[in-house]
Length: 131
Image 1 (cartoon, rainbow, N blue to C red):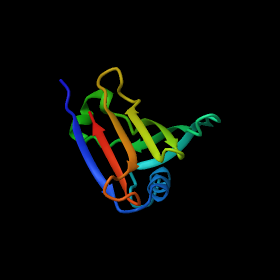
Image 2: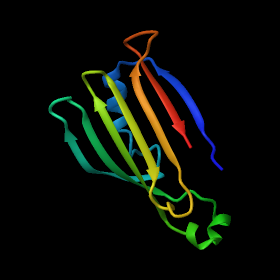
Image 3: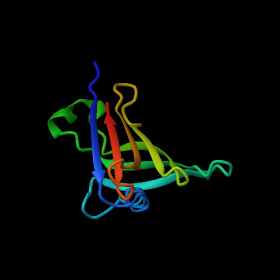
Image 4: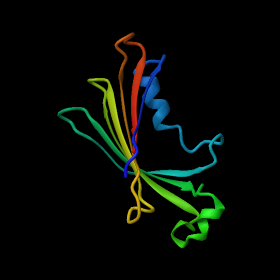
C-alpha cells in the first residue's frame, strides 16, 4: 500500500535565496530533531553547470515510545539520504531524499523541484511529493 502527498508552494523570494536557504537550513537550534548533516559527495558537471550533492542527515528517532517496544524501531537515530541537482543556468533544483534506516521493512521518499514561478519570475515555486 502506498500513500502520496503533493504540495505546491510559492516563495515570494528569488531563486538564489530560496535555494541557499534550503541548502543551509539544517542543523539549526529551532529543529533539534536534525542532529547533523554531512556532505558525502559534491561535484559540478562542467558542460551543463549542474551541481550534484549527496548528503546524509542524522535525525533523532521520533517514533513514539509505545511503538519502540518493537525491536526494529528501538534505535536512537535515523539516517536520511538526500541527493540534489542544482542547475543555476536554468534556475531550477531537484531534490530526492529517502530513509536509510528501515529500508528492509518500509520505504519513504520525498521529492522536491524548485523553479521560477509563472506568476512572477522573482518568486520561487516548490513542488513537493512525499510517499
